[in-house]
Image (cartoon, rainbow over all chains, first blue to last red; front, side):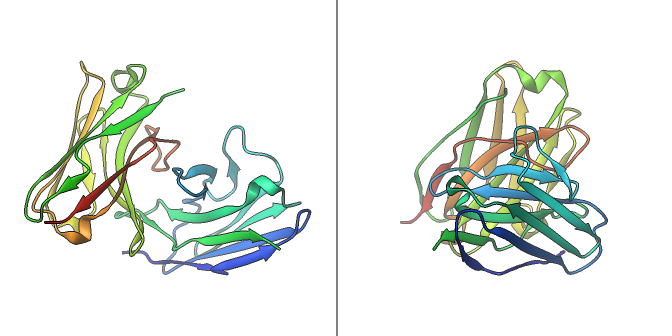
Length: 107
Length: 120
């Protein structure tokens, strides 16, 4: 199975900050990575797929990048509604697997 | 937009079978435009993909569930189903049904989830 690690596990930032979350895969997965945001008590919501394609309706302050084994999710100008936990998901190999999550909180 | 609603038992005894259903709002199953999946989330194991079913009936399952799982759908009832056999406490989780575009693997729409506890 492909293992995904995320860093940091937790980050505390201020409104307006630029925030970057990294997801690393244990083997190459080309561009087949997605990012989700989850708020407490809610289901995850898709933000980015194919590493860098923004899902419909997702604000342009979110961007994804990377390929093969290293990927990033960047929030350019953090907003109050961006708190929550962010997960990466690899879609290249079965079983599909998720990263452990990065919790974003506000200072 | 597709809406999904899971339902089923909240409490299941160890060794019993868990059967969950997911009602799909607008008959989207028969369009063939989506793949349909079940996922779960527990504090100890994070998010876990259980498996997919495509309109063709082809299924893919997470091998970690060791052949305990069957995903199916009933097109006429617009309903997706999950059968998980011989549950243990490790199967305690929030179970989500979800869907995504047919020729991709990502999940675009999630249900609200249903918490299932396995306990005697």
